[in-house]
Image 1 (spheres, protein in one colour):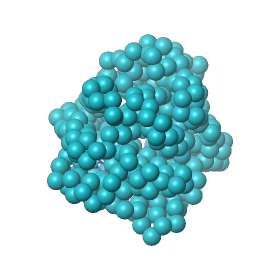
Image 2: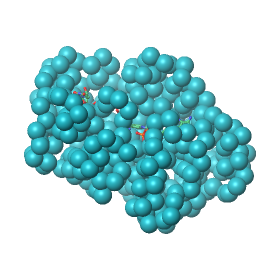
Image 3: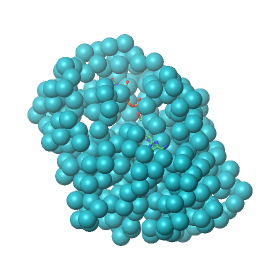
Image 4: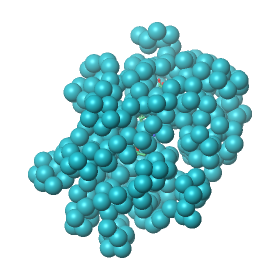
Amino acid sequence: MNILVTGGAGFIGSHTLIELYKAGHTAVVVDNLDNSNPEALRRVAEIIGIPEVPFHKVDIRDREGLERVFAAQKFDACIHFAGLKSVGESVEKPWEYYENNIGGTLVLVDVMRRHGCKNIIFSSSATIYGDPAEIPITENCPKGQCTNPYGWTKSMLEQVLMDIQKADPEWNVVLLRYFNPVGAHPSGRIGENPNGIPNNLMPYITQVAVGKRQELGVFGNDYPTPDGTGVRDYIHVVDLAGAHVCALKAIERKCGLGVYNVGTGHGYSVLDMVKAFVRVNGVDVPYSIKPRRAGDIATCYCNPAKAKAELGWEAKYGIDEMVRDSWNWQRQNPEGF
Ligand code: NAD
Ligand code: WQD
């Protein structure tokens, strides 16, 4: 299939491009490069072994820009990664998050349908469950109260896409609810490249390990978890990328609406991650216990059985590969791209 990949220069998008080409698909990237670097696409092309990844520097809110991209070729489906994703920033700048994530998706979906492309895979998030009503989280778990505007954009966009699919069953909509993506391509050529101080655990750990930050602050050790620190379902980004290839097969089978958790089903604490990182990589990660971070929950991990049963997808990589590949990327690229 020929796939439009919005946000394809970003962390998850760049890894997904590789899996798409490996599976025999072709892809065209649309990205405004607000949170990414074109060097990522150059390296993706190098890994795939093609001269370049077709790329348009277009903002998905720019209707004419998108129209030009759709006028130039036919797309069988869109994998829609483009969006702003910083939880803390979304609290400071809610308008920007609603306008970019929701406004952008509405323009994208309208241009898609005008050009007869009614297949979309959407990057949703475990954050839509809020403080989850049950653990492990199944897709039947009710959506919860999000603690920040970013989370609400994902929750609202799920509703928008479900309503569009319901009104027009020609649409195939796959909502993938990612848990906590970490790791990097095993080559170490591409990986997560946050701007400024990382918000997420794994890039913070790698920046401490490489000497860019002094120590990791562990946000709370008094949660009702085995060691008191927060438990999450970390998933290797290459596994996550593979889920999109499986979702495309579902679209080819005319799946209608599909909603899937994409995680490993294993919960690891902050200290589990730190200890695994130190053990596997043989580097030190100094840390100290800090107060809880506002909005954090104690435990979040999924039951990924539905994705296995219906998409034939399951995670292959474990915690050792996650910490190995995160470090391999950071070690080789201490300043990012
Ligand atoms: P990322 O920031 O690395 O990638 C997103 C890309 O979208 C960036 O390259 C950015 O430049 C681009 N972009 C943003 N707004 C755009 C716009 N208006 N027009 C065109 N391009 C635009 O983030 P990521 O970690 O790769 O996440 C990809 C998707 O997955 C996002 O939608 C994110 O919300 C979602 N997600 C991420 C996580 C995570 O922890 N990384 C978890 C769950 C869901
Ligand atoms: C993981 C654990 C922290 C940093 C966020 C978004 C979610 C999704 C994934 C997009 C928690 C602890 C962290 C640090 C720490 N993104 N931690 N010190 O909060 O589970 O999820 O990213 O959709 O929406 O909310 O991920 O990596 O920030 O935190 O102790 O410096 O690590 O308290 O227990 P989180 P995270």
